[in-house]
Length: 253
Image (cartoon, rainbow, N blue to C red; front, side):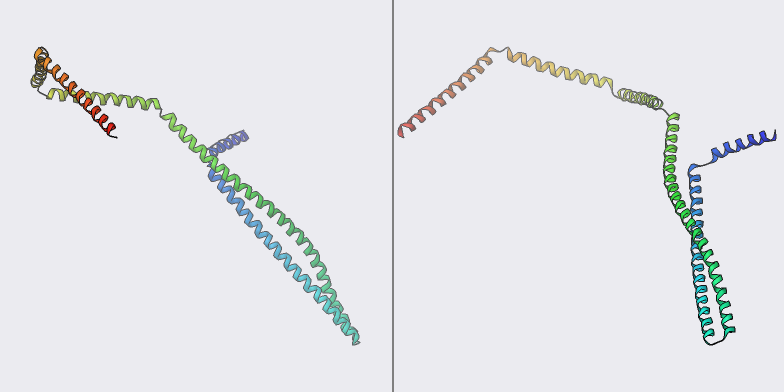
């Protein structure tokens, strides 16, 4: 029973965490943890390399000391001092033994350093891949958030609703315009307007009667026709004079 309660509680906690977790924040946090691990591994590799260098130096010193005490033992033998030669040989053996142990340590250290270098290279590649993946996922998360927000806005507001509001406002504006026009029309003097219209029509009637009176007089038609004939005769006379002058000029040539 307690196990079932624990499982239900764990599921509730996971669901709550799933709602609270921000993808961008979690990606950044995970990447920072990888960076921290990378720094630690680099420090370990640096320490391993330093230890390797120290072992190499100690190994070389012990080898040098072993060679030095070997030479000293030989010098003691040449001088006939066997006791001193024995002591020199004992010291030489101590340095030689230390050199042998250091060689074994140095071999192990080199293997450990190579292993750490390999792990460092792999971790660097993982961190680089994680960075690229993080950037891509953050961009996708931002795009998804923007799309979700846009869809929420579109679901709350529709174009048809906005158009209906605009149409209602247009109707109100038209009503105001009609009311203003009606008030303007009521503000003018209707009697004066009627007289102005009547006067305009009277002027047109007078002009029409005058035109009809002129068209009814025959004398004026004859005078007008005589004027037209006289004008035609004058034009013909000028044409004949131009032809005579042209002929005279041609005979003179």
